[in-house]
Structure formats: C-alpha cells, structure tokens
Length: 208
Image (cartoon, rainbow, N blue to C red; front, top):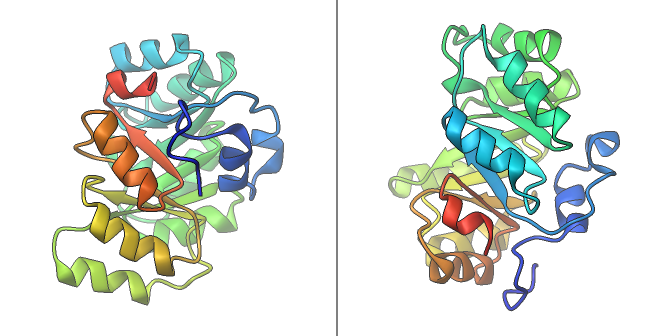
C-alpha cells in the first residue's frame, strides 16, 4: 500500500507493478506521479508538459485522431492507456480493441465491458476494468468478476473511502480510484483506504 504521508501519490515501482503485464512499456518509469486522465486537447497538452505524469488515460478522441493522440503521449515519454468506450466511431464489439491494437501504439485500454478486457489481454494490452459503484448491485457484481480477468480495477467515484476499503480488502488485482476527487483530503482518504493510485482529470491534483 502506498504511504499516505508521501508528497507524491504513487512511486514508479508501484506503477510498474500495476502494469507488469507489459514490462517493456513501463521499465523507464523513474518518477513519482499520479495518473492523468485527459478529456480534451488542452488537458492532454498540460499532461504532456507535466513532469510528474508518467501514465495518461485518454478519455476522448475518435477513430481518426486516436492514433495521433497516442503518438503525442509516447513522444513525450509517457504511457498511453485508451478508454476504448469513449472513442467515437468504434464499434461496441471486441473488434474495437483489435482496432486499438493494430492501428495505434497504445499500451493498454480501459473499458467497462468485460469482453473488451478479455480481448485486450489476448492481444497483449494492459486491461483496466472501470466500474461505476452506483449502488449495492454494482458493488456485489465485483465478486462475479473472474479474478484473472482485468489487470486492475478502476473504481468511480473515488470519494467513498468506506466502499474503497471494502473492495481493496478482497480485490485480487491493484485498484485505482477516480471521479469527483477535488482536493488533497480526497486523495489521502482514497490512499488510506488502500487504493493503488489516483486517476483524475483534475489538473490541480496532478501535482499533489
């Protein structure tokens, strides 16, 4: 578990362990940092210029632009994870993952679809399953996820430390948290609950 008293959120060894299914893509991680989620070009540019950021979650784009977005991230020496559900023009079938694998140089994907996660692992991509914990049914559904399916979980919202603690206590894979995280208090509460890292579009959090 990361040390909540550390000035940085995640050290490079933790991030490397998070993505150890693709060791060649993470062996150059050398600095502490959060995981920056970007939803537009301005956010992307700020993430690319931020020395604390080593991993970028891409939450926007379309089939015409996603390859160039990934290239920009790699050109900045960072790792690109595509939220495949949010890329306009992609099908809602597993072939969307094949497109990301064959037409971009992405290091991995995020998806709410277990079939996409399964396909990503077959193709050698890092596979992050995003789960929206909206009610008790969603929480209970975590118990039904095959333990070897995702490489890690990404839970939203990340401002429910009691629930995060419960999930982290039983999860077989690293757990991320994101969504509605607004300040250092939110960050520390999530870390103390046992999550591995913060993923956020809130740029004020990137430098905490």
